[in-house]
Image 1: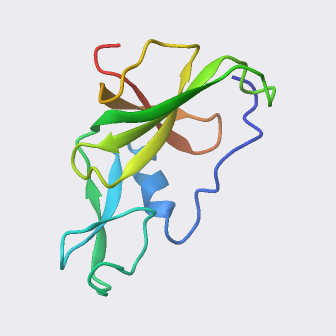
Image 2: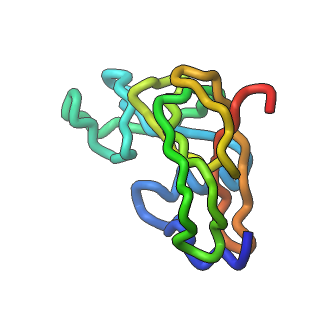
Length: 135
């Protein structure tokens, strides 16, 4: 990959903890400490019970493939096609679905076990990415 001119903003009040954990090689999700509901996108307020007692929780870093799509036409010089965008449901909290990118056109199947790995984007943030278990 090139200079990574498309970088996520990692200093947002509600998502900075996600990126800080990723920089340490940890995958986290936000959850309510009162009703145990996972919150995604992450927020300080729980829409399920109305409480404000939320915190980051460590995830195992495993999930199942929910869906995917392969991009065949290059739209940015840092991301040569083909590549495949995946959406993974966390094993810890299936209501939390996170995206990742795989190079090429891998053979995939719905429900396939996936595991996280961490990609450092140059001098920018670290992103959790996903790959099939065993690859």
